[in-house]
Amino acid sequence: MEFLGTTQVASYCGTRKSCLFPDPAPTSTTKDTYQSYYLPGYRYLSSWRPSLLHRVVSVPPSSAGEFNPTGRPPTVLPTLRSALHSRYSIRDWHHANMVQLKGSEASRYWAGRLNTDSLRLMQDKDQLTHQMQEDSSRNLGERISNIDFWRSELAYELECLLKETQALETAKKRLECAISEMQGPLKTALECLYYREKRKEIDLVHDDVEKNLMKEVDTYKDCQEILAKLAQRINHQLGINRDAQHALEQDLSDKNSAHFIDVKCFNLRNTSDSINFYHGVEKADGTVSVPATWAKFSEDNVRCSQHARANSVKLREDTEVALESTSEELWNQFVSTNLAFNNRIAEVADAKNKLQAQLAKVLQEIFQTEDTIMLLERSIMAKEYPLKVAQTRLEGRTRRPNIELCRDAPQFQLVTEVYTIDDTLQTLKKHLQEARDTLQTLLHNKSKLEHDISVKANSFFIDKKCMEMRKTFPCTPRLIGYI
Image (cartoon, rainbow, N blue to C red; front, side):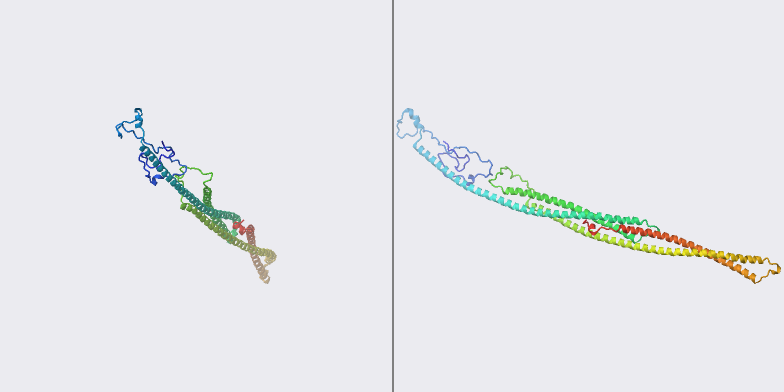
């Protein structure tokens, strides 16, 4: 006969011994009593099956030559003798009952202890499990708070970086607009230089206007180069800002995903529908960071973004300073060039006016010289007849006969008259030649004056044309890139 419902490995019943010598006291310890703890869902417990707790051992019948109290042959029939020797004695019967009672009492005792220890164990494990779940929930809550903190930091830094990047892009556009606005005045200055090459002869001088124009062209080119270098630096900084922005966005996206996952895990309860067994998940460690490196990663991203923003602010300040300084420098040079143009135009106009006044005087002198020549010619022509008369008289008196050829007063007077008129004619002819030479000189000067006046007029027209081209200049907002 067997007692059903006990485990084969149960240790509360003690070591199985012969039923004739039961041991009512427990021999196992508490360490032998408790089994190893496994997580729910694991099937490591042995299956239950009936086992033999106690067997009644048959006592073999006494042999025929054993004790016979009476010394008489048994009174039973011979056919029942063998059955008589196979029966148990009263002592055996009492002994078997006692063993059965003691075994049952021991089993009940150990079952009571097992139940008590099991209840206490279940309470302890339930409390431990509940406490561990609470600790996990609290840790998840703290982790969610940390993620929320870094999410806010990353979001704020990302917003600041986006604003700074937009402001830096605006500064870059202003630089590009300023560079493009300088093209017009630069082209005008170059056209003025090329146009002034049309000046002629002596007016083709390296004057203050040309020096200022060349300086203005160099100033425009230098300013464009400075602004272009600033634009290149800003373009490089924009790349750095975009890298920092990508790192912040990626980190923020990861933080959002982690926050969603941790909130979902935080809200899981024992009654949730989405819980399930995932055997071996605790053995797989796919983590790539610890809390220190996790926080340092976000801190480095924020610090990198802050450094990029600081560089962007410095670049924008440099851009403002460069735009203002270049605008002021260009305007000062433009004013200086215009002043040189005005001075040169005034000089050319004054020289032209003086030449024109001189030309008027030369023309007047030419007119008077021509009159003088005409009078000299008339005077010479007028002296020819008196000379002819005097010479004719002398020639006629040479035909006087003999003694009549007297060197008398008329003779002396006629000879003196001929010499005097001849000398007068020579003097008048000399003056006539000098007058004619003077007239030629005056005519040559007149031609030169007229040519110089035309040259001055050409230069005056060129400079006035240049000033007309330089009437318009980009306003300060345009030069600093606001328009």
